[in-house]
Amino acid sequence: MGNGKPFGEILEDADKLTLEEQEELIDVLSRRIAERRRNLLARDVRSARDELRKGRCRPVTTDEIMTEILS
Image (cartoon, rainbow, N blue to C red; front, side, top):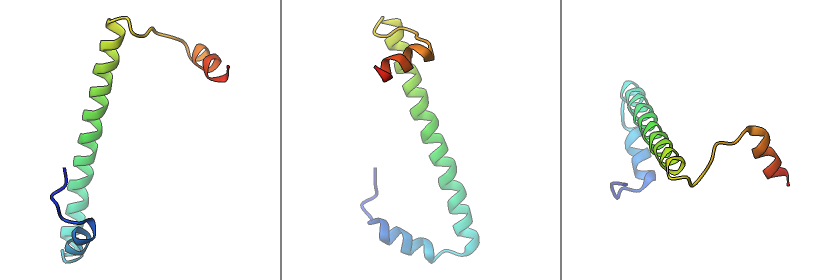
């Protein structure tokens, strides 16, 4: 998903921005990262619900999970 520009060059370009532009860049990137994380989480939830609906997994308690992990 990269633009073909090496990360180091991107950092050099960011250094050329004014302080205000750098702060805005951080804000924009933070919002985009949060949105990507939300999308990934939503995808994982949809997948888990689909697996549960198809009977590929079953609800368990934390005690059951811990017993399985420790055995």
